[in-house]
Length: 244
Image (cartoon, rainbow, N blue to C red; front, side, top):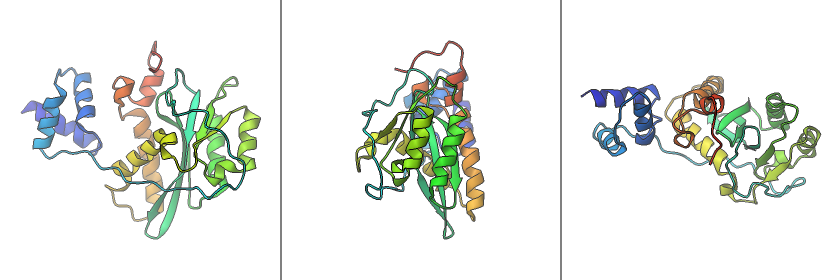
């Protein structure tokens, strides 16, 4: 059956990362007017199921510096790029070694605008990430940067960098993961779609795989709330409509 073959091709192309909703969206983009319930039923019959999301690493160590108010108040949408950013750090373990990932996400389209990896969870990890992120900004762009209350974000050195560039700092309430839900969701997606399904022998191989995955996430992995487009496709499309 041609529809089954098309579904399997999309599922395999994205390494099992798509559930029936995204498969349906991609089928429709290719001109097939298929109902999502039909796709769901066919995928179930073929044993095609997207991957499960695990829990994340926590970096909270108590109040070690100055905290900031929650400016976002769970308002995770933005009507333009570089208006609201969120960030966090997550940890991976491979063969007794650790790898830490520190990304920044733009809430306008869910794009990872900058990221840094390191073998140690030190301030340089987030400092290098900021340098990359600031390079993406125009002179008049000053997004709010939201995080949890991790020790890195309470440091005066981190806060001085934001103040110097004119960015407002925002923090989640202590112990409330829902206040930074978009970044929590990204880490869960990354681990369920890349880290857990694949076998990594070294942190070096994982590091390279994360770089490839983030490129895939930004340029190819569609989001239903972005009209079935990937984040970069949404940002660069002509006459883009504001986020709802």
